[in-house]
Length: 272
Image (cartoon, rainbow, N blue to C red; front, side, top):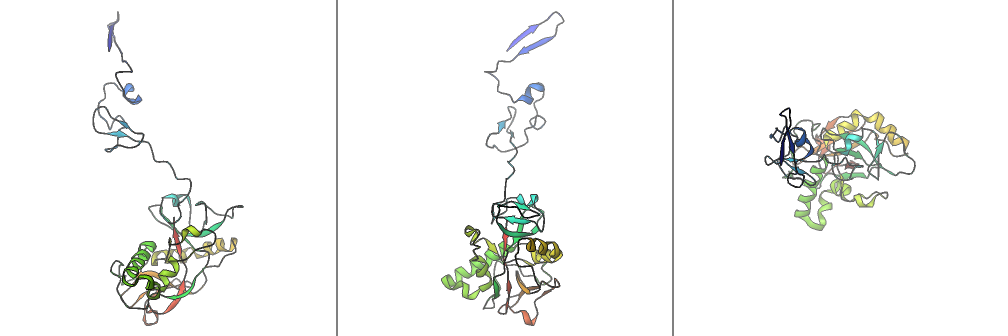
């Protein structure tokens, strides 16, 4: 460091770059030694970050915005989509059909965490929820309407894991609806096998609330509309019952006609 006194008695400092490695903002505020004020706001180190010279804080670059969704898991990309958008195999979505892209679903739910779920372009048929009366250990019981249950894939995984542990290769015989969606493999994207889920009550309720626009999008790509069937949800009621959803009216039921062993419509959803 070199100090020079001028005739006006002002002091000038020359900093040797080889001796001091301050970020740019430190030069602008030489007297400031508070890391947060200087813009160092992370308490942990990070890739390509800069450490504060006055304490254990880091300045970290903003995470890159994903260019597209990773189908089968939440990446936060759903904030770039809206309900009733067409979801494509490349992880992008749009209101209208995009030439040269292949649809894989229609967006039916977007959460406050920017995670979304898209409805499969086809139904799989009618299946029993289960062929035994067991209260699945890791599955919540909804004794009132399950419209606040949006955990389609968490629910599905709980049943898949439980049945696999109990019955091994015969698990699909005991929980047909769940294994039907788990084994679903759309020809447009075979790598999504094992990533599809049985929709939860909250997601089915979202489908009903947006049924008109969702059906319009399905019609644009010549795929099966939501229809008017009774659908199984992945939301459990008791050991003997799970919640059933009527697509025509949006009603839920778990009464005497809706034991788990009864056969109802199954159509998967995919997280993104």
